[in-house]
Amino acid sequence: MPQFDVVGAGLNATDTLILVPRFPAYAGKEPFVEEILSPGGQVASAMVTCATLGLRTKYIGTVGDDERGRIQLDSLQGTGIDISDVQVRKGCANQSAYIVIDQSTGERTVFWRRPDELRLDPSEIRDDMITCSRLLHIDGHDTAAVERCAQVAKRHQIPVTVDVDTVYHGFDRLLPFVDYLITSSEFPVRWTNENDPCKALESIQDEYGMRVAAMTLGAHGCMARFEGRFHYSPAYVVDCADTTGAGDVFHGAFCYGILQEMPLGGILSFSNAMAALNCTAIGARGGITTRDKAEALMKRAERRVHREFARYAV
Image 1 (cartoon, rainbow, N blue to C red):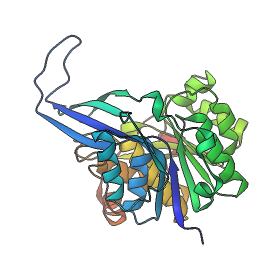
Image 2 (image 1 turned 180 degrees about the vertical axis):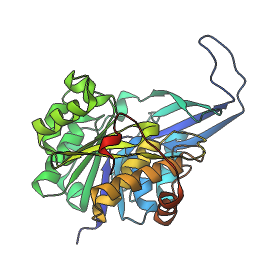
Image 3 (image 1 turned 45 degrees about the vertical axis):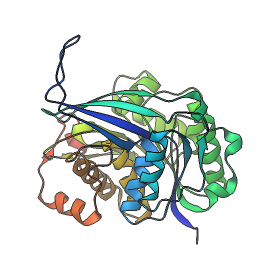
Image 4 (image 1 turned 90 degrees about the vertical axis):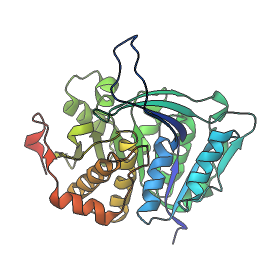
C-alpha cells in the first residue's frame, strides 16, 4: 500500500488579512477593523483539508526562510502533513498576500507576490516523491515542475487532479496527464476563446481526454462534465464571513471524494459543503471542518441555484 493517500505539489502563501466594514470606492479611504496573519495558498490549503478529513497527506513545495515561511511550515506540521520534501529557500521571502475582506459581504480582494527564487524546478522532482501516493493534486503555477509530477503519476497509474484559475505558458503540455480538471469559471473561456463556458469546458475535455472536466462557480456552486453529460451542483447558503480559500478547500474535498469512491454528484455536493463551511470563518483555512459537519450542512441548508445551469442539476 502507498505511504500516502494524497500528495500535493504547488503553491503556499502566508496571508495578511485586513478586515474592513466595506470595500472603499476607487481612491477612497476606509478604516480597517482588524489585521490577521494567516497561512494559505492553493495546494497547501487543499492538503490541510485532506489531512483534516483523515487522509495521509504529503505536501511538496518551497517556502522562504522568513517569518512568513516559518508560519507556513508550522501550520502544515500542526495538521500532521508530511513536509519532508518542502524546500526552504535561503535569503528569500515566502509568497505573501494582502487580502482585504469586505465584512458586509465576506468577499475578498487579493494582492499577492511570489519571489522568483521560490520557483520549483522539474529537476527537483524525484519519482519516489510521487509514487508514494494514491493520488496527486497540483496547481499550474510552476508549470514545468508540476508537469513532471503529473508525468510520473501517469506512468504509475496514479490519478491527477489540477486546480487552475488562469492561463499559464506551457499548460497545454500538462493537460494530457490530467484526470480531473477543476478550473475557475473564467479559465475555460480564456483558454478556448469560446464565450459559452459549458461549450468551452466540453472543448477542453474533448481535446485532452480527462475523465472529469469541472469549473467552480463561486457563490453558485460548481459544474462538471463526465461521460458526455454535464452535472451541476448548486452552492449551499451560509452566513459568509470570508470567501478566502473556499476554492482550495473545495479541491481538497474533491480529492477526498475521489479516494472515498463517492459518485460524482456526491463529490460535487460534498466539496460545495466543505467550501461553504470554510466561508463561515475568517482566513483561508479558518472553517475547514469534518465530514460529519459537511454532511449535516448538506441535509439542512438552502442551496443557491444558478438559473443558467439549473437544467443540469444533480
